[in-house]
Length: 167
Image (cartoon, rainbow, N blue to C red; front, side):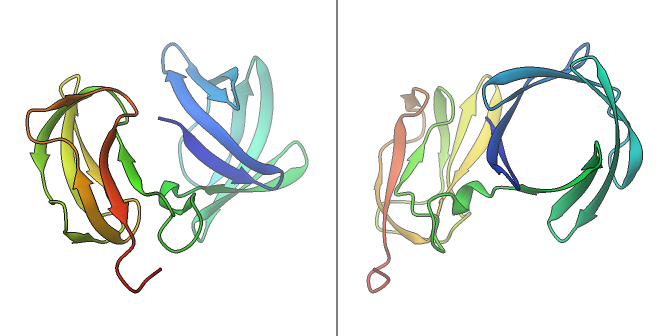
């Protein structure tokens, strides 16, 4: 699953594709190798990016990270996937399967009111359990899979509608 980072020039999709022998990431579709990142947290150091050594300084500030590299200071924010659709509830009406698997537990039923981030289903894929949560406040109009049911990647697992009066 890709992480989205917001920088001054826009939002960039970052996905970790390998960890050994060095960290390999795909940033906006291009592969990069990162080595010698150093310890996490505030401070300065040197990072090796695609074979080039770059000195940096970083500091965490109120949900963001300030990074000074190559003479420029960049603010980096992580994009909350719940907020991507815009508005207070994120705007998404469907809960999609992030990978193929099976439903292990159904936490909520059709007709239930749910809050953003509330557990709807727990799934299992490759022996890893993941809880799928409501992407926004709403009412579950359909839970399309039950315990033991299998599904494919990106299959719709549940659907939401706005809470009556919130439209």
